[in-house]
Image (tube, rainbow, N blue to C red; front, top):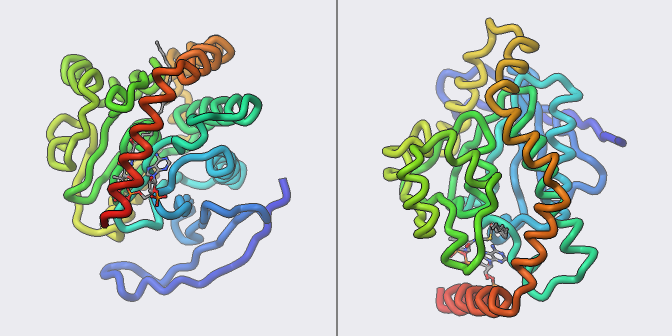
Length: 289
Ligand SMILES: CCCCCCCC/C=C\C=C\CC(=O)SCCNC(=O)CCNC(=O)[C@H](O)C(C)(C)COP(=O)(O)OP(=O)(O)OC[C@H]1O[C@@H](n2cnc3c(N)ncnc32)[C@H](O)[C@@H]1OP(=O)(O)O
């Protein structure tokens, strides 16, 4: 892949207890919806989702996320932090416009890219952390739970709310959720389509920490990644794999079937109708604001 390397100085003087550092921006020429930077001092990469207004995950954004993760691994980064450029939304989840009245080939590529992104993030060799600085419904929660550590800002929401839109969270969405939330809590919440407030999410273990600012969230993620500094990266990666291999193999072996189930479900007229009504509701709410 053709990676452009630019060196950009970032003054951290406004952040207490931090020495001056630099970040390298590594970005593909086509990167449109993401910013990817590596801190030269810590070796930690940050992937910032930047697709206004709500970072909804379309095919292009998913592809860029995959490229960033690959860059972080190829460049032997110490870890990867995922965050958002928005002050209120981490990501609104999958772009509903990819699934509402979709084009056949595009929607297949879209779902396949989502499967790949999830498998690559969930199974990544390097430590991964989510600095959740806004709402994280559905696909947003999927990305957060694919990471090893989550820190969230107050007064936002996170969860798998698919049933409220008339769709079903696939098994692999649920499996990562089950890594962090007790089974009974998970079953009740996902069948209800519950979105947890930050405080509730912290209470059930869906997020590990709560802090007040994005800077603090990034610092917490850095702390988590830094906690592996005395651990052999190879041993760490293999150990992580032992915990995650089952879900990864399950999806890998069922990719085509999973795609067909997805297509079968979203193409049902009743599901298309429910999605249309949901989208309309979002648009009406957006106009009122
Ligand atoms: C048996 C096994 C079967 C397995 C089958 C598998 C099938 C699975 C299929 C799909 C799975 C999907 C998972 C998903 O991720 S679906 C997406 C779920 N997301 C949501 O429900 C979130 C919806 N959005 C919101 O609640 C809010 O937008 C919020 C994130 C809280 C931000 O609020 P706010 O800042 O007030 O922004 P607005 O609501 O005003 O939105 C601004 C504009 O953005 C549009 N929008 C919002 N979300 C989406 C989205 N996800 N996709 C596309 N567009 C979105 C919204 O309509 C506004 O648009 P406009 O400005 O044109 O009016």
